[in-house]
Structures are given as C-alpha cells and as structure tokens.
Amino acid sequence: MNPPDQPQDIIFSPSGCSEVVVLMSTFNGSSFIADQIRSIQCQTFTNWVMIVRDDGSTDETLDIVKNFAADDERIQIVTDNRPSRLGPKASFGALMERAQDMHAHYYCFADQDDVWHSDKIASSLERLKKIEADTGADVPVLVYSDLQVVTKDLVEISPSFYAYQGIRTGEEPPFHTLLVQNHIVGCSMMFNRSLLEMATPVPEQAYMHDWWVAICARVRGIVSFLDEPTVKYRQHGGNSAGAGGIRRLFSLSGWGTLWQKLNWIFLCSVSQSESLSQRLHTRGDSAGVLSPTEAAAVYAVEVWGQLAEMNVLERLGLAIGWRLKSQNNPLTILLYIQLLLLPMLKRLLYRPSKGKEK
Image (cartoon, rainbow, N blue to C red; front, side):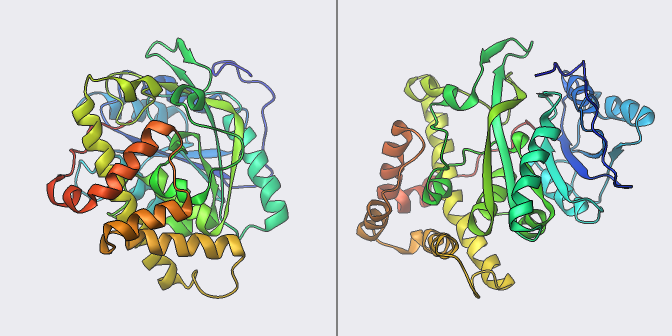
C-alpha cells in the first residue's frame, strides 16, 4: 500500500463532475488537520470534492483549511446559520444535508486528525461499484474497512482496529448486535446516494451519525467489509471517539465515566431505533415486498424501539430469544445488566457533554 505522501497510479473518472464527496467536520484540529488534507489530496482517485464545515474552532483550524482551499478548488468550506458548536453528530448531519444538493453518487466521512492510505477512496469505490452492478444504484450500500491504529506521531499501535478492540471480523454480525453496539467506524465508510437519502436528516435521537448510517444500511441495504486498513486512525488526547483497546474494559481507572457513557449509548440505541422505525413507516419502507432479512430487520428496529415499554421479563426474554450479544464478552455482560436496570438508567442518567470533534 502506498504511503499517503507518494501517490501512484492516478485514477480519473470520465464523469464531468465530482463522483465522490468527502464530508469533513472540524473543531480545534490545527495540530493534525494539514496531514489529513494532504493525505486526501494524495489519493490515487482524484475525481472528488471535499466539503468542510467548521464547528466553531477557536484555533487556526479554519485558516489552515482556507489556505488549502485557495490552492485546490476541490476543497470547499461551507457555512450555515446553525449554532457555532453543534458537536460531531449534528455537524456531520449538516454536511449530509448539504451533500444532498450536490451531483455526486458516492460519499464518505473524513475525521480531521487521521491520515488516509493513498488508495482508500479507490479501493472502497471499487467494492461499492461491484455491489451496485448486482443490486442496482437504488439499493442503499455501505462499504467500510479496517483501520491501522497509530499514535499522535503516526507510530503504529496495532495493524488492525478490530483486533485491538477485541471485535470479531469476517461475516457481518447479526443485525441485533448492530442495534446495541456500533462496530462500523465512520471515517472508514463510503456509501452511495441511495443510503445518503435514506439516512438524511440524522435525527436528534441518534447517538452518532456513523452508527445511524450503518443501521439504515443494514435495514434496507447492503453492508460490505474491506478486510484491510485504509486509514491511519490517530489516537490522541482530543479524540471524541477512538480505539481504547479491549484492556480498557478491565481497567478501574475511569470506570465510572466509561460506565456512564456505555449506559448513555444503550439508551440511545433504543431511541434511535424508535426514530428509524418511524422513518421507515413514513417513507413506506416497512411496507411492500421485503426479503425475509429485510422484514426481520424492520421488525427488530420496531421492537427494540419499544424496549422501554416492556417489563423486565419481556426485555430479557427478547434478548435471550434473539441470542443478543455484543461484539465482545465483557460488553455482553454489561448489556444484560442494562436490560435489567433500564428504568433506573432512564431516571438517573444525564446526557454527557458534546466533547471534542474526532
């Protein structure tokens, strides 16, 4: 794989307009954003445009982006009348809404502090187009990849994000698992226009934009995994999301904060399922001719969205009937504790602060 600063085999699209739109939300990322933008400029596939929304930075981030944009017309800064500090979910959601007005068919998220492998767009696009050749462009499709976990200085921590997190790869996990734990990292995604339209707007009830997009794809479309890293996933003190490693689950340091975050994620898994169920009914996606897999997914979303209305025996019975489990054993244990304590969690838990942009 070519290093990001030495692109080779440049791939051009015959289309007169940009085929791929890269969505980047920024916030106080001046330490690393130049590396990321350069890695995107060095992609072997060049027919892309990047739209950047700054979420109220107080450092030099926006000035750095403006300097790149002045020299590269593919980089565009977008502004809107929204509050200056939305947080990553709503800021990426705003970019998705803007992307709907653009004449492109493929989209991907870019975090401000990573570094892309030079063939990230090309390899994801190749897989996505192969799937569309069989399904047609009207079917929502999402392709995601592994990530190389690195330090802030780009020194490798692990060649595989999924191995580092103790998450099984290979065959896609059951849909029920994705309902309670997102394993698809947004910065590794590429998805088509059909999925963009289905997933936009991102509802307030969603935990994060990438999890929401992934669930939408699994309900009515296709999700495909590239078993190779396409991103250097930089870990530093300012990550709003990141790779803590499976050992973190067994560490007493910061356990209270982690437990609180996991509980909030659990509650959001219920509320975003309820929101998706409502959208499917509004769009008519829960009616008509559905494959057995689609029908089961639509039903699962509807039932999980009603979890708070069930008593404890009904909740446990549902989980056992589904053989519900997380992507690793420690989190599966926590999940069943959360099912037992759901009413108490709803009363006691408050929403964490928005934190910093990843």
